[in-house]
Length: 165
Image 1 (cartoon, rainbow, N blue to C red):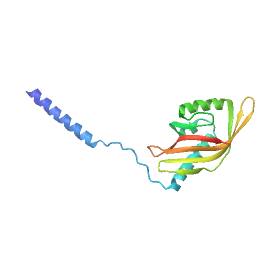
Image 2 (cartoon, rainbow, N blue to C red):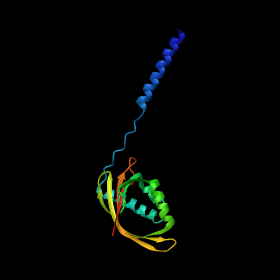
Image 3 (spheres, one colour):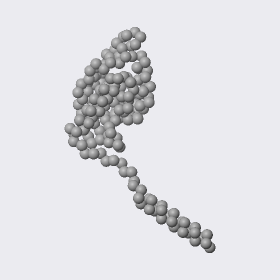
Image 4 (cartoon, one colour):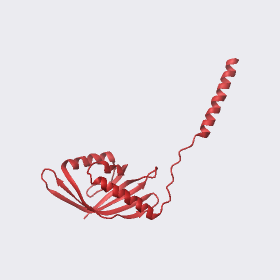
């Protein structure tokens, strides 16, 4: 009989602790996008773009960190596809092994904004110099990206494409 009372008391204490624990547990609610003015959004994204090109000019792989882990890219002569940052690094590893890449210039970006997405486009001029033959290919066009607000309120590229002149 003593064991039954002890088990019942233990069960009631355990149940009380569980109920109190559940009541005190705060549920993680997704962050709601902050209402930001169009000019503030443009300023934020322009800073990200400036950082992106600063890192891209180093010609290592850190610029790929500006992308969502999986994003959409559309390039001439390729199908529209979802691609991962790991695949992008592998692709650019091959490019950097064969070419010296030089960004000659880039233009000021233009924006189309919404609360959680900003489309930007800007002209660019870069060259690819083959490391062995020294043949040079000029790549001039417009770079178009869609920056998406992330749950932590940061911004990453969700879509990219180029229009070559």
